Amino acid sequence: MQCTRVYSSSTSAVLHSNMTDSIHRLFFVTLAITNSIALPSHAPSATSRTHTTIISTTSNCDSNSINVTLLLVQPFSGVFFAKEFSQGCRTFGNSSRSLILNLPTSGCGVSLNEEEKTQRLYYRVAVILQQDKFLRQISDENKLIKCYLPDDSFQVKSSSMERTLKTLIPDINRRKGRMKQHWNDESKISNDRILTDALLASKAWMEIVPAEHTKRSGVLKVGEPALLVVKSTLPVGIGWRVVDCIAHDGLGDSSQLLLDQDGCPIDELLLPALLKKPAKPIALMKHQEAVSKFAAFKFPDRDRLHLTCSLQLCKNACPQV
Image 1 (tube, rainbow, N blue to C red):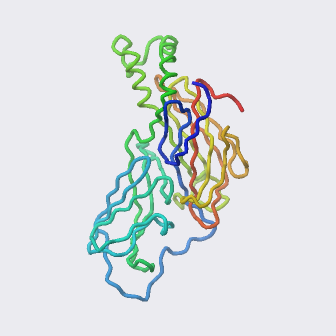
Image 2 (image 1 turned 90 degrees about the vertical axis):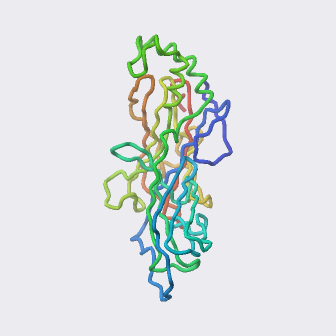
Image 3 (image 1 turned 120 degrees about the vertical axis):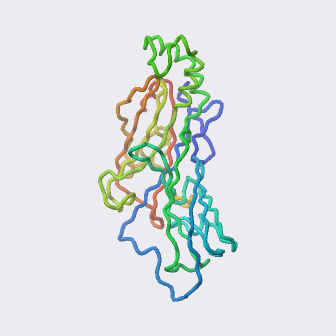
């Protein structure tokens, strides 16, 4: 598998592949950033109206989208939207007691997080139930939605990687002598099974986290240090690098290229080159992370920063640029 680049016109957050690709789109991540003290999310209204309240919330999600369902006490005719994205990420009530809001994980303030204890990945998004279609009121409800992802959500699927692994596995087995017990004895398992297990275990994801402890969970001020962390679990013999990183406003109105097609920074004041940490071997797999420390920035009309990057896969190590 050569390090030739294959471009995809899709902007979906899912890891994409076709019969010849070696480029995979990493999911979008977001971080709330402010350059001043936040104002209250709503102000008292002089209008007194009968309003409804939320009985329960449920959510389901995959790497492409998150669906949030509300059950309400009374019929609702207002608007339900993602916080700070009231125009592009909303749904209107139709006088029923239930509402469904579908949000793309590529924007709308949806952020990806990793639970520290269990290492499970989940999406988080703040939503607002606005009682009136046009006015914000003290009776409006704010909710923080948390949706855990299936284990295979960020699986790397690449036919070119599969073809490469078919040639690498026999050689890896010979060099390792005998496989570890949890991969089963060589006498009981075929190379096809080893290949299948390796492909199922291949995944990659990306996070933005504060570089220093802050009491404002998930929120930074402009200029405060942040970390872009790209994590991968890939088979031994498969190299990778981060390319085509873009910052955008969550709706596609504004964007800024951060890393070019070779993974080189456009402006190191915005985002320096990512540095890889040593790989940790796991049987025939290896887990590795790449990190870049940068000063938090944002677009003038948005308080949330969205990033998306692509992962370039190579046979062995990717060539130096």
